[in-house]
Length: 506
Image (cartoon, rainbow, N blue to C red):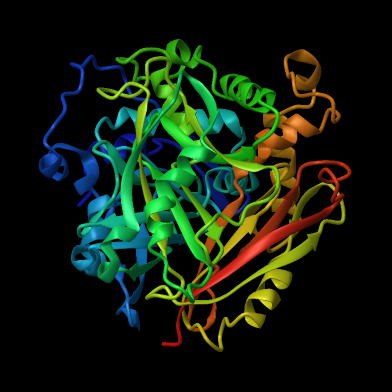
C-alpha cells in the first residue's frame, strides 16, 4: 500500500482541461526536524521511503532475453499527480538484479507526461519541493506543459549494478515524476545486461571539484576508465561507457571542452533557473542551507547518469568539442564528503556479453531551429545495424556529438508537443541573458543559451529494443532539438549522432 510520506507529493485539488485533468502541486506545512543522521547502508530500505512504490505495487511481465540479457516490462499505477519513490519495487520485480555482480540496467518510461530521475530517498519534502520547483521552471497546467517537463527531466535512465545491487549512493532513490492526472497506468521497460563474468568492468572513483560550479573532468574520466581499457582483448568491439554520480546535489553533463567561460556561464544560468530565493519562498527542505534544495533540483535537471559510446579501444566516441562536466551545486559539497564526489564507472566490452551488433554515425539535418521528430530516420539507421535481425532484446543508445543541440523523447502525435518544448526552452533560457551576464558571447545570442539547453535536455538517450522493435511508447518519438538559428560551428544544421546497438537475437 502507499506510504503516507509518498502521498505528500500528491495534489489535493485538480483543474479540468478539456477532457484531461492536470492537478497542480501542493505544499506541505513546515515541520522542523533534526539534521539527518548517516545510517548504515544496509538499513536504508527501512529508514527511508525507498520501500514505497507508486500506489499499487507494479506488475511485472515474464522475463525476455537470454545470454546475459534480461528484459521485463513493469506497470506502475501512480493514480495521481506527484513524485513517487519506487526503488524497492524495482528490486522486487526485477529479481535478476540480485544475482548480477556487474552490469548496467536501463529503465525506460513509456509516458509523455512523466519522467524518471534519481534524488534523495530520505526526506519526503524533497519530492514536494522538486515538484513545485519544476512547476516554476516550466509553468502551466496544460497537458503540453507536462510533456515539456517530461522532456526536461527525461524518460530513460541508465543505472550500473554492482554486487547484486543498484550502484546508487546512500541517499539516492529512483523517482517517478508524474505531471498528468496519473489515471492511466504507465509502463517501464527494464533491460539488464549482466556482465558478472567481468566484475572489473565497473569501479568507483572519486573526482574532486575545486569549488561550486561546472568543471571539465574529461581527463579524470579517461583515467578512471584506463584500467578497463587496458584489459580489452584484440578483436574488441565498440561499446558503451556509463558514469553515475552517487550524490543528489551534484550532476554530470556533456558540454564544450574548449572555452572555460562556457562553464562559468552554465553555472550562472543554473542559478537563475533555480534561484536560492526559493529557499525562503517555496521550499520546505531547508535545514541544510539555501544551496541544498536548489542543488537537488539542478541535479534532476542535468541528471546523475551519463552514457557515452566508446570505440573498439574503449575510448569515448564524442564530438570534437565535447567533454564531461562534473557540476558541483553546493558551496561546501555533499554531506560528509565535501567536494569529493564518488562516480560509478562501467565499461561493457562490446565483444563480451553486451554483444555490440553495430555502431554507426548518422547525420541528421534539422529543417531549422526547434524540436523535430526524427524517429523514422533513427529507426531506419537502427534497422540497418541489426534491430530486428540481429537484436530482438537489448537497447539502442543514441548520442549527440554536439554541444548546442540535444536529443529528447517527446510526444510525437502532433506538432504541438515539439513546439511547446521549444517555447519552454526559450522561456527557461532567454537570449536576453547574452546581454545581461553571459561571457561566452562571441558566437551570437543563440550560442550560450544553446549550450545551456543542451545540458538540460541531454545528449544521450538509451531506448530499449523489445521483440525486435524500438521500445518507444505508442505516443513517443525521438526528437532532435536544434538550439541555434544556423546550427553548430562548422556543421550548420547537420548534426552527427552515434547509434550503438547491443543485445541478443532472443
